[in-house]
Image (cartoon, one colour):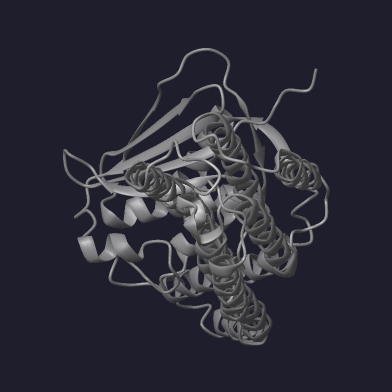
Length: 417
């Protein structure tokens, strides 16, 4: 859908330029060519055009959208007023007759086909009528001070000026209108991509909820069987220890499933403002509990009091996912940095893994795309989606010294005075 509000604004600018040019042309015709013009009628037509322009500019401040039929009507009004001006100023003999092409060019760039054909037919009709019906600029029978060649030279000069103005209008205003339409198209494309991403996320959430519900029964069965096996083989300590470990793992899985099913319900209630350094340190501590084999260094680049971040369970999980990805790539010597400025917090993770290939970099953040050769390929997608919900972002780069650099940006929450 074209942005007709912006197109109408550009049209008002074109009218302003046209008004100025026509006023100059009228003054030149009267005092330079000694033309016998009906100043009152021409002045009235220019006044109507100026009044229409003022109304249009005022209308742009109203909340109502500018529709295609309205914009079409505006162009018809322009052509009618241009035709009235040309009728009093030489008709088709006026070198500025090509002014009628301006509304047609604008319509071709902004309106649908049926409106363009209607305007084309009207342009042809006006031009054709001005070939026969018009008020001449100079009446040779009444004035002998103008020679035919001088008038021809003036006409050629006027044609050149008119051509120059037409080029300027096409180059400047039409290009701006096309740029506005392209921006609108890009915005629609972004909305479409977001809609597709939301559908994918909803599908993943639906599958996760279904899987969590279905896994509850087999996990309970496994726990019962493990307890029975533990009592049955009580005389074998080594086997009992293994059974206890398996039972603990099933309890972890059950607890994780319960936490996942309840996380959405408690998401808002667990939201709190935390200093960025505390959030990052707690997330790193959680990683070290899960992955004790990981070695890391943590440093804070910025100085002063750490800014506040809006912290939730899903945000913690997103940062933990990125740390786990770095540990999967290379668990040794992971470098973690925290930095901030006045608007954003920067959380950087540098691992010494194999890095990112060009093919992988084009698909990062999409669902079911993994860089590890294993897994489901949804971790980074869910992380990017969660960070986007908090106006944040995540980007992955190949580090100049080797490995992968993961950078997270999050907006700083304002302090309550």
